[in-house]
Amino acid sequence: MSLTLYFAGGSCSLPALVGLEEAGAQFEAVRLVLADGDQRTPEYLAINPRGRVPVLALDGQTVGENVAVLTAIANRFPQAKLLPFGDEVLLGRAYELIGWFSSGVHVSFAQVFRPERFSRDESAWPAIRAGGRENVLAAFTEIEQRLQGGGPWLLGEAFSLVDPYALVFHRWAPRLEIDVSAYPAFTAHAQRVLARPAVGRAVTRESSPQRLVVNA
Ligand SMILES: N[C@@H](CCC(=O)N[C@@H](CS)C(=O)NCC(=O)O)C(=O)O
View 1: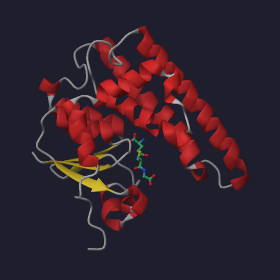
View 2: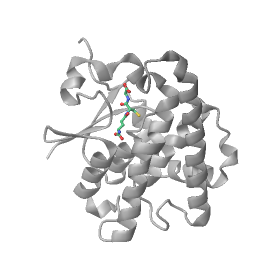
View 3: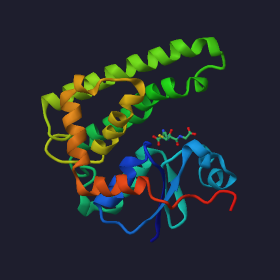
View 4: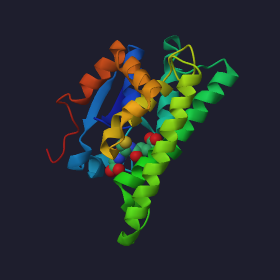
């Protein structure tokens, strides 16, 4: 069964890339450059009409959205223990966090990065941005408190794909001029995630030359 991950550097596709690297999977990694609009090309819109990453193709059958992509990867490689299948409380917590990251924390960042998605009225954008930033700060406080209450990983003793997903937001903090030193447990967690060899390989892939061929 062939596996292809469509991803972009610095984006929310990082946990999917980490999952494949943690599992030692054989896969093709196709890098998009969002700043160049690769996600809006007809070639990519045929893969994901929403024009977003990540997308995982399993034998050419595509799955989008982090919650689904991460589930598919964890399910494919059970020996890698990427999600705590078999422990209903921990699994519930994993999906609670993945759901919140995808539909809450990510959306708060989008309010700051892409206010035009929330209102066509440009005069509303400063308020949308300000509200998004406040929501991100509240989310960082919650993540900080969770990690101070128990660790070293977000689900406790065991690493899971929730951890590199949280790293995505820590990496975006400077773009909102958030001082991460105010979140010491979250910052230590980000460093712990980055120290994993598989995460190092995923980060290296983020700047690999291979990319979706546009207008070739
Ligand atoms: N809800 C989606 C969000 C995916 C998403 O927005 N991805 C961003 C990268 S972080 C993207 O592809 N952006 C391209 C664009 O907005 O044009 C998920 O969790 O997978």
